[in-house]
Amino acid sequence: MVPPSLLTEMRGAAMSFTAAASGLVVFLLSVSVVQGQDGWGVTYSSTEICAVIGSTVEINCSYTYPSIWKGSDTTVENTFWFTQKKDGELVDLTTDSEYAGRVEDRCENNICTLRIKNLTERDSAEYMFRIETNLVIYAGEPGVTLSVKDGPKLPSVSVSPSAEIEEGRSVTLTCSSDANPAANYTWYKENEDSPKASGQIFTITDFRAEHSGSYSCGAQNKLGRSNSILTLIVVAGSSTMSVNIIRTTLVVLMLISVFLLSLWMRKKKALSSTTEAHEPEDIELPAPSSKNLHLCLHPGQDLPWLKGLHQSHHNQGPEDQHHYSSLHLCLPQD
Image 1 (spheres, rainbow, N blue to C red):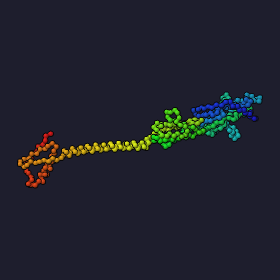
Image 2 (tube, rainbow, N blue to C red):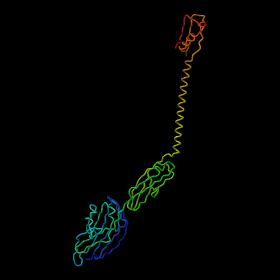
Image 3 (cartoon, rainbow, N blue to C red):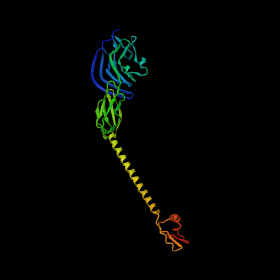
Image 4 (cartoon, rainbow, N blue to C red):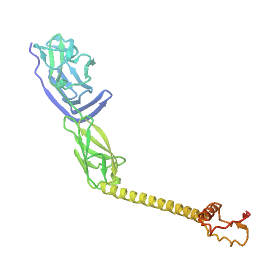
């Protein structure tokens, strides 16, 4: 039995973008395709689908068939989705080990949906729908081309020379992400709506305090977008640090000098007071006209001078020595 010839009719084209909880799905070309002749046909809602690795995709179609074919009643016995022949036979994807646990095939009222979860690059293929009746086996070819690609992964952001930048210097930010197709890059600064730059490399010359903050790099292609954040801070330059060090050193030296000078002045004053208090006074002894000697201490004098007096008297010769019968000592009143 020869399958009916195929008739393909294109009915419109549109772009659409949808997101599912289990992943991102992108329909690059959404069209209505009718294939068939004499009442036989398969209509796909899309001819090309592009999806991201790890996401979920749904491929939809509807089918028709004549109730009577060449005088006989037509009964649908089986329908399924397939991609290629294995050992010369078409394989139902729900029984294919490569899709085990990841494929669902739902049909109701001649409308069928193939749902594939956790997409991998190996799932990229042409998917077709097959009708098996008691009279005719019909396959809707060409089918739907699925392309599974890698959306932008979390970008890697590097900074040169470092995230701590000396004021007045320049800094270069670089962003990269694995993506298929290749991603476009945009730079933003926190709390600012307008982008700072585009492209993988972003350079800031004459870095100032107002440039400090968090910067985000966004990698985007037709399959999605991801962002990474980097924080930059400004630090004092080497010349500024040297000036600050010199200033601090001078202040410390001045304080030490003032302290030492004050300490020296206080010590000198204390020594001066002690010297004046203990400075010996010359005492004139009266002539030995009397046998009695009267001595009085004046304020500021101390008793140790008596030792000197005694020593001086002891060193005199016999002809210079004087003897007194009594010594009267008067002390000042407080």
